[in-house]
Image (tube, rainbow, N blue to C red):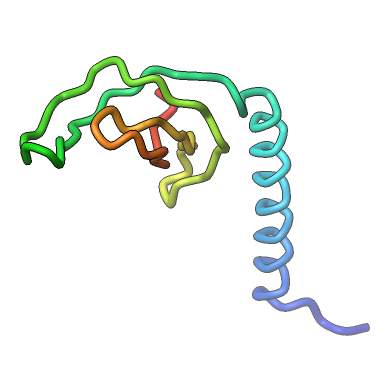
Length: 94
């Protein structure tokens, strides 16, 4: 019988944890994708070069992702109020 190494145990635990995290993220993504949230951003008006604080920017949730600190971020899209372009950004859940 082959001996199990420390690295083998760690790899198995890491792989299982990764799969559980993906399952958890996908479950909650299915619940929130397409919903809207209000975000705040400081955005530049390219016509004047001035920056404006936009406190009530409506964004649509496009997905979720883990951070390196084990937090979850929403990936959201919004229409830039000055350019009209659809922009993607990340927003903390809390």
